Amino acid sequence: MNIALDWPPWLTRREAAEYLRAVHGMQFGVAALANAATDGTGPPFTKQGGKLVSYWRLDVDEWARTRMSRKVRSTSELRNDLPPAA
Image (cartoon, rainbow, N blue to C red):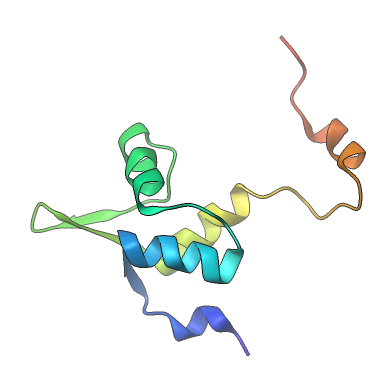
């Protein structure tokens, strides 16, 4: 069963936050999505009627994947993935 398919293709900001929690296990709330939209670090979105923000579900999935590390068994496995210290 693919839980992502149970969601509509377009998500409101509140639905996107719930979707991130339910499908990807990410604790990313409505306010965090709004802040990410302001600074350009969140998933792509559209505005309808000047106020309603909508996220395409597939864009949310892609964005969520970019925010997660690869699967590891120990945090030491991620050391090589970090950018070099300045």
